[in-house]
Amino acid sequence: MQDDPQTPPHLRRSLGVVHLWSIAVGMVISGQYFGWNYGFPVAGPLGMLAAAAIVTVFYAAFIFSYAELSTSIPQADGPSGYCRRALSPFFGFLAGVAVLLEFGFAPPAIAVATGAYVHFLAPAIPAEVATVAVFLIFIAVNLIGIAGAALIELVATLLALVGLALYYGAGLPHVDLAAIAGGGGEEGWIGGAGGVLAAIPYAIWLYLGVEGAAMAAEEVRDPARDIPRGFIAGILTLAGCTALTLVVTAGLGAAAGEAADHPLPEALAAVYGASSWISRGVALIGLCGLIASLHGIVLGLSRQTFALARAGYLPAFLSRLSRRGAPVWAVIVPGLIGVLCAGSAAFADALIVLSVCGALMMACLSMIALLALRRREPALVRPYRAPTLALPWTALALGLFALYCVLTQSLGATALPLLGIEIPLTFVLPGILGAACLYYLVRARRRVSALATAGRRSPAAREE
Image (cartoon, rainbow, N blue to C red; front, top):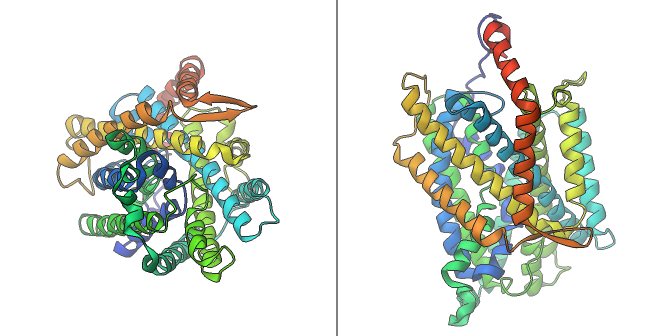
């Protein structure tokens, strides 16, 4: 950290290849344990594998491009800051809303799965009670603060990988290839090409949040060398886990029937029994990974909320800090909304689709910002540059394609059950975005402009 108060602070460059790998894998490894299996009923095992392959290419291109933005403009509000600088304050607001959708709806979905895993291990505890309790605990943890978070995340990542290795080792000998291919019939490719498109959002869940690794790119010792190696290792690890998870789960016959919130232990239970040590061991280790991801995303959501409030996009009270330095209201308000969303397992499918919509909107806007900055600010210092412009263009094209798939295939087919009424997401998502834009026009636009003007006049404000 710089001692000169007139010099903007810089993060210490202390990360290497292994650190980048652990962050990239750790942010999303819990996605292997649930969520993606909602793609089996709409696409079949082979269709889900095809969707996962498309999504893997998309995220590989995206993360290498996104790293350029995160090292060039190391701002706390992330995509919102990139789009505000490259495009306009309004697009900065849209990017911020997209991140809030992604990180706002992911925690309750993870909490629902966490409750399901707890119920599997202790049937006496209702899944709904466990879900709400876990969420409230992590709201409290983020209010108090936690030491050694990076170490906790690393240990949880390794535990989650051990759990997956245990699952693969126990499941592979019992894999039935005919179950994966649907017995050679239509069950392997449910819906054909349309089924693959419908499975895209659930395949994205396997990688959702991996951009968190790119946000640490400013702290890499040798960006030009370590970022490609770390990211390639991370993507290959996740791609390998994805292929094995899909093959083993489908091969054990879990692709048939209704999707569960704890697919891995349920698949093993069909072979070894629900009370076997192997099924319960995978469930227990998977629970550790889910808890770590829940904590990490709740932490990220609170910081994103705080940063957007500080920039003027959200009400000012959300940027207030406690004596411990925690953004107390930025933790409490999104957290309580998340608790309400996590109150029923029936919400999980809709929450995943909404979170994926936010992730894709954020990715597309970020790639547009990168391309605009390359054109408008060629002299901008870029500690790391995407090796070729083909990467952001590929990420943008596949991101738009994936967003099209979600909007046309999943949004209308998924509903949010509220007060006994099934509300299609085709109304929910436009309603959220419309309300957000109205708020920006009525309230936030003037405040953002006023803060930007004050920032141009004050060196201290610019540094903040």
